Image 1 (spheres, helix red, strand yellow):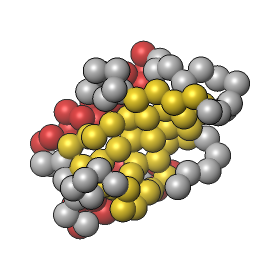
Image 2 (cartoon, helix red, strand yellow):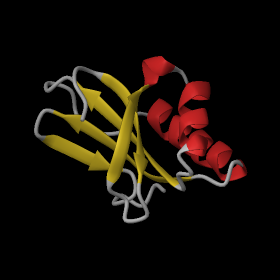
Image 3 (tube, rainbow, N blue to C red):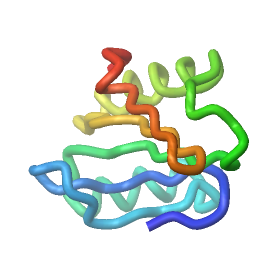
Length: 99
């Protein structure tokens, strides 16, 4: 679903399975427009880091996640999770209780 490093937004179905994935270089506005047009209710933020980096959230990651979840609620969209991948390691904001 993802290649390289950076952020991807996944549009999820009602069982939280990915339907579409859009790299953030498409811009927030375009991604939100796609999600609304797709009648999505759930999104996931997927972040890929280099394998030698820890898969732990930084303060900027936490701020971004909280702001995104807050702004999505106003559009009747929900953030299912923010997952950070770094090599084989993975961190889930939802599993850690941060969502």
